[in-house]
Length: 91
Length: 139
Image (cartoon, rainbow over all chains, first blue to last red; front, side, top):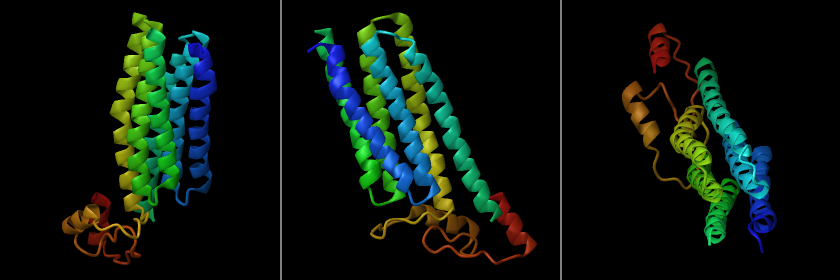
């Protein structure tokens, strides 16, 4: 079994299952912070998936997308936390 | 030989990512979910990125990957801290069998007993005196 076949048949399905499970929490999550954390986890999983996929296709260009995603996710989570704080203070 | 090391690292990372996903669904409480998710997903992504660096054996790619790992390790705890604090302040309840809530206790110590209820017993903050409002805004 070569490496790319192993990734395609074992690693990526495992990561996709993790993605679906995180999405369940995104849909069900009783509060807004639950959903924000689920989105954070999904972004980290996308980083992992694009890294594994860059090994499959032998294309390191996918890692650039991972860098951008890592930057954007942090900003998104901080923005949501700021918004939550603001809405509590003004309530 | 290299492929074996890469696949071992990839398997470890994917297992950590799966543990993070199980944790975010099965944990009973937002704060436990955040704790399970941030640590396990950081480790999972770092292992998979390390496997990628090992596979490419290229200085440019390795530098990029080290930058991603450093950024993830630096920012994930900060983001988790901020969202956890905001959630606690907005009154997301703890698990019913939690035994300790130090943040509510310390905020009470700082602000006096009436200005912040903490999660669970949130009060409507009806003290409308300007001094109380100012104090509340400063915190």
